[in-house]
Image (tube, rainbow, N blue to C red):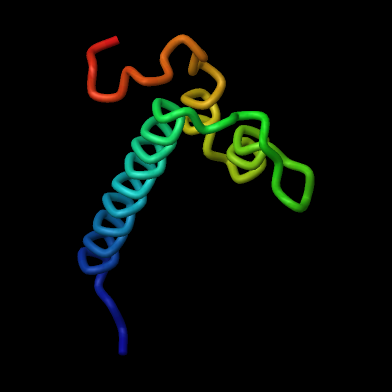
Length: 81
């Protein structure tokens, strides 16, 4: 089976849209956890923080969300800060 250029471009567009959506979900999830008091300094079994893991996986936006969160923001979930 062979695909046309147009079909491949459509598939690429759908995949990129899904990836963008997934990145947004990850950032939103991280914000929710941080607002509810998650500890940014916790490490996994490989001795990596969530921020280090995000950087190592190329998700700089997520790493920035984690890095820019302030302890003063805990409990402000859903508020405009």
